[in-house]
Structures are given as structure tokens and as C-alpha cells.
Length: 197
Image 1: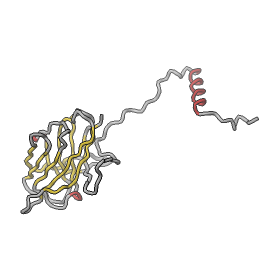
Image 2: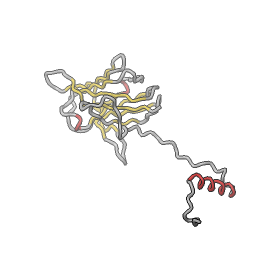
Image 3: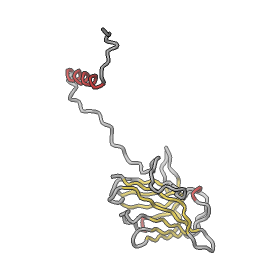
Image 4: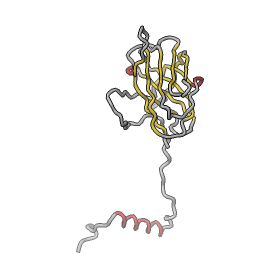
């Protein structure tokens, strides 16, 4: 006959015996411990899945104060120094047509940015004078800085909006026109913004 040290008990029988013991002590009615709800940080996830992954896609950093549907949120669409190779004469952000949030030019700013980290938040250090235009459908934001933006330092577009009512992933693209004779806008990268259900 095996000793009690070698006897195998299933985990479910152990939990059942523990519950019976707690019931005998009058502790069975204690509410279960639950973890607090996680607060959204509004930063891009470490892993992103895209159906159309290709080498021409460049991920850009962004921060948002809320990822909940219909919440008021501040978006910081960031362009780091490494994301651009030339000065910028005109900056265009394309917005998917299914991003059903009203973008008001009055609630847009172009800034020199401080990137956040463990001990600090992403924030606007200095507002750069610029004219903003949003097309009628809301699918493009055009920024015309007063003077060309040099290619050093971190800049960003700060946008205050109400999040869309639909959850999902929304790809915003950055296109920049450099000073020069050829008025062509080049692709800088994309911000893949997620709105939680």
C-alpha cells in the first residue's frame, strides 16, 4: 500500500477540499479577488498584425490619451528625426474614410515634441506656426508650416477629437513635401491607431 506522501490527488479535488475547509471556517462567503480593470495607455501595441505587410510600410510612433470609443482624446502623431530625411515644406496626413470622427482644424497643432517614457509623458514643447486644412470628407489633413520644418528634432501633430464610435484599427499615413522645384509628396510612414471595443 502506498504511503500518503505518494498518493496522487487531482488539482480539482485539492480545490474542493480547500473550499470545504474554508466553508467550515465561515470563509466560503468571501467574494473572490478580482484584478482591477486595466486602464488604456493609448500607445501602439508591441505586436501588430497587418494583412498587407510589405517592405514599403514604415511604422510611426503615436500616443493617445484614450483608446475608448466616443471618448475625448488627444492624439500625438509623432515624427522622429530618423523618420524624415529632408526639411518639410508641407505635411499631409491621410485618414481612412471609415474613421468617423470630426476633425476640426481649430483643434490641431504642429509642435516640437518631447517623447514620453517611464517617468514622463509625450508632450508638446513648442507650438510651430502652421495653417491647417481638412478636406470636406475628413480624409486628409494638410499642414503648411510658416517656415520649412528642419530635419532635426522630433515633431508631431497634436489633434484633439472625440474618438470614433466604431472600434478597430485605423491607418493614418504621413506624406511630406520637401522644399525644391518638384512639388511631390513622399511617404514617411504610418500610424496604426487602435480603438478598443
